[in-house]
Image (cartoon, rainbow, N blue to C red; front, top):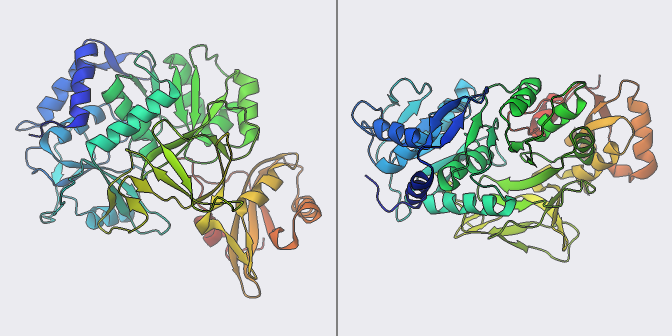
Amino acid sequence: MKTGDPLLTAWEQTLARQRDEPALFDRQRSVLARFGEIEECSRRLGTVGGGLQAFEAGEIVAIQIGNHAHWPALFLACLRRGIVALPLEQTMSEQERAAALNTCRVAGLMTTPEQPMARLAAAGAIEWGEHVPVLLKLTSGTTAAPRAIRFRSAQLLADAVQICDTMGITAADLNFAVIPVSHSYGFSNLLTPLLVRGVPLAMSSDRMPRAVLDDLARTESTVFPGTPIFFQAFGEMLETPRLPNLRLCISAGAPLSCAVARKFREKFGRAIHSFYGASECGGICYDHAATGEVEGFVGPALRGVELQALDAAAGATQVRVRSAAVGDGYFPQAEVGKLGADSFLPDDLVTMSDAGLRLVGRLSDVINVAGKKVNPAEVEAHLLSFAGVRQAVVFGRASSLRNQEVVACVVAAEETDEASLLEFCRAHLSGWQVPKRIFLRATIPANERGKISRRELAEYFADRNL
């Protein structure tokens, strides 16, 4: 059994304060579990017949159970036994899951909390070295190949504290849990605040925006960590419930457009606070003011986070993130200079001011048009300023004459046509920035984190001209 673990120590303090208080609610606001019941469940899971006795300290077990009420107890049981947890999203394909299990040398898999964890083929002992992780966060990085990020309890604790202290989230709040706990955003904003600060959760398993909004009102939740796709859908609904208890709306996972933030504020009288983070280091920036006046603005650094520009003289630069919440490195392969020693270098391009950071693109997204570099975010911002355009994603696709050409996928009002948009771009953008084609679509597909993959769009529209 593991002793002296910082997360377990924080949990014991939470338990001492709130043992008999509700910790988990369902969609009807009925109590699913009290803090003391989570503790009892975690103890059972760690005993003979509980499902974890078959695994040794240092082994990796994958957990793919969605936002199930067993998550807090299961993670606590893993902590006590020194077992490394690897959360997996339910939307993964069989092929993606098989690749992750193989790459990360996973020893056990749980897909149904009511059944014991299945033992997989022996993966062999893992030499973790000095810093043995308690959690692996899966990420694909800039390639499609899976890899994981190593975290110890102290780093997860630091992230939870930085988020709660910066955003003012306390045990008096009720956190609405619809974003996946299996993703870094959900783990840091939902699960660890419950363990560390006693912030209860209202659990939701329905991701349809109408159902989410109704559940948000019914549970009387005070904090809603969401993604732009939810806030956009809420703002477009004709009939909506009142949300008198909701005091804090947080948007992360993808850039929040000013138009979406403005429409939500007009309808619900609530500001949306942009939150910027990364799987490798947890929270980075938070927009306290939430004025929604500058596209891509994510505010200043969280408390306890330091940002250092790589090229302060440049218009757009990368920033190095230093924090006690930064992970120890990638697994199974390290990447020197990218992650480790309390430091992480994201691929995002930003502009910096006294007010905070503004996201303007990613290194991997820059489009090379005959030697000219095009930042997709600049073209997207211009398209979004056209009346009737609700969403715009710009990406590059191969061109035999110019290396790459600029292409856009747009969601707009019914009367909007491609010719008008192209004319608008030609009038205000440099020639190499003007899209070769603009595809009008009813929706642009996003994953369950609300992110849209430029790479996947580029593959889909590689040879389409219709």
